[in-house]
Image 1 (tube, rainbow, N blue to C red):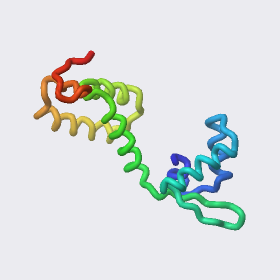
Image 2 (image 1 turned 90 degrees about the vertical axis):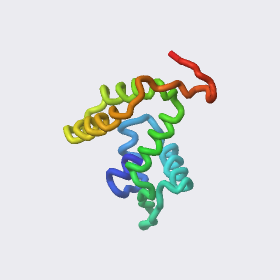
Image 3 (image 1 turned 135 degrees about the horizontal axis):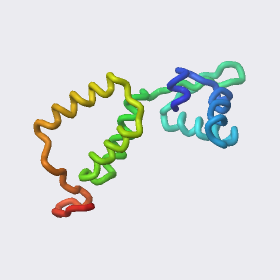
Image 4 (image 1 turned 45 degrees about the horizontal axis):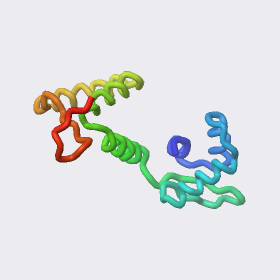
Length: 129
């Protein structure tokens, strides 16, 4: 998806060439992946001669937000802050991103609890480590 989002559209040959520089996948594996993304409604295809041109049907930022939301819904909320710290520490951020984060964190600090409760076992008052 990253390739097609970046290029706006791409043929399977373009995707294959780019992906094979990054991962050791066979062409058939990449074509299978593209086919599955079409079946899931993430990509559409346009036939151009003998080639298929793939275009995204899902927005990049919305898709990334959904993935992050799913990830953080599956981890203990008591540890979410530490996980965010890890991500921020290991991610290159622009000055604009940093300023936005600082502003949002200042707003969240106003009503933030002293400690976030563990939500691993609903209905139980458990402190996980």
